Each structure stands twice: as structure tokens, then as C-alpha cells.
Length: 327
Image (cartoon, rainbow, N blue to C red; front, side, top):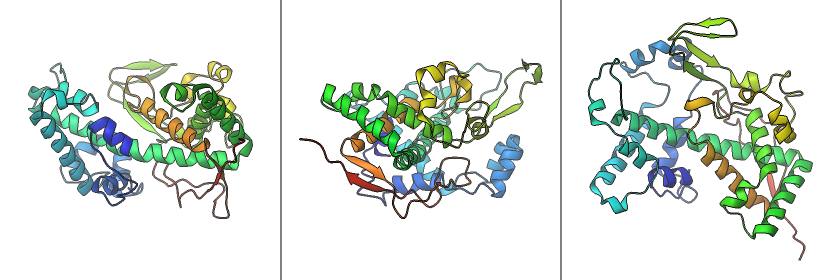
């Protein structure tokens, strides 16, 4: 959470020592929704009614939380506008502000070719960056640690890779993180088993034909990520944790659209590289000094909440033991 706030918005939040900070509590509340609420069911069954329901105050996310983040983005924008150019960091919000087109803040016909983004779009993307970046990355980190604890032989290989790279480079830095290829396979296999989004939707803009199937323009197409990730024809023994599925040879032999933890195409997750860097850094730093072990409180298999994401039911309980390094 601290990384997202600082790199995307230039806001410093020490969430570990201030768990009651408004940014922390509201970020958690943003994704704490009921999959079977009336508004959620309507949104899934009749997504075209989304804008209509908004007029009556119905939303997937808590209104209080959305209002908080909307105000927070406004504050960041106001501060950036008032400050000198030298004080403006090159981050997500600054790039969005650079692309701001004030003409789009007014009612613009859908037939007009639009350049840039409106203030509403800046706020919407800012809120999405905050909400989507925190929970998904934190859960993937916990679930990867769980998989390593349950599969000690895999953890042995990951630890060996971390030790080898530290011996070569002296520390875990950006370049070292990019060399953690085996640890990345462990993270990718975790994302296959527990995708951050179990499904996503796209709107077909024009009449299209795919393998003989005609898709009219305006049709909403759903991509069932969970079902694809557990298709036994693509992933033999899909219930098993096998990082070797993501070796170079295995990846080249598989359809690239069989693995969709971050979506695909021009509208895939814009925080994909940041998330992977965070995960590798956190895990490598931990494995440098500690090992993950199961305990009497570890629930096997782990259970996922019914929220279409990778939120964990009952948390992940592990024991962490200090490694005994040879002198």
C-alpha cells in the first residue's frame, strides 16, 4: 500500500505503524463487497444498467469509500496545480494531469473524437489504481508464501536462486529482481491458481467474427479467467502447484491467452510490472533471511472468498523461521 501511494500519487502513508490511517481503512473497505448483493447481481446480469443505477446511488463499492478517494484525488490535483513545476514528481497522477483536456469536463457528444482525459476519468483511474493495487498484490504475496510453505522443495529452489544472485550482485536491487526467474515462476503459478480477477469483461466495439462465431458490435464479452486457468486440457493437474509450468519451454508451447492474471491487450493491468516487482522484492528480501513453514493454524487447502478476486477466507497463517546461514 505504501509503495502504491508513494509511486503513483506522491503520498507518504506508513500503513504498518498506522493501520487506522484513513487511506488504509478505506482501501480495505473498497474491496469488501458482497458478491450476492442486489446491485452486484444486477451489474453482472444487466451490465448496461450500470449508469442508470448510479443515478439512484446504487454502486458495487461503498459510497462513503468512493467519496473519500474522490476527495483524496481532488486534493492531490489541487496541490500539484498550486506547487511549482520543480516540485511535481513524474508519477501516475502527474501523467494523467498532463493528459487532462478541460473541454472533456463538459458534456461532449459521443461522436466527437476525444483527445486526452477528463477530470472524472483522472479521478476514476486514480481510485482504481488505489483500490486494485493494494488488495490484489497483498493477497498474491500471502498466497505465494503459502504455496512455498506447503511445497518445501519448491521453496528450496527459490532460496537457492536468491542466495546465488545475492552472492553475485551483493544485494537485491532492481537488476537482481529481474534475474529472479524461478521465483517469478512461483508467483505466476500462484496467480494461475488464485487470479486477482476471476473474470473480466470487454465491449466489442464493431461487428467481429471469431472462429465462425459472429459477435455484434456493442456486445459485452466475458472472459472466465478462473475457468481458463483450471482447464485440464491446458494445464494438466490444474489443482497442483507446479512452477515449472512457466519455464521458457512451457510458455512457448502454450497459447499466451491461456494465462490472464493481468488481462491482455491494450487494456490489460497498467500496474502489472509494478506488482511483479513488488512481489519479487518482498519475497526475495524475506527468503534471504527466513523460511516459510506451515503451523497448526495453517488451513490446507486455503479458501478464497466469494468476491470474484483472490481475497482469502480466514487469512493465511504461517510460521516464519530464521535461516541458519553458514559463516
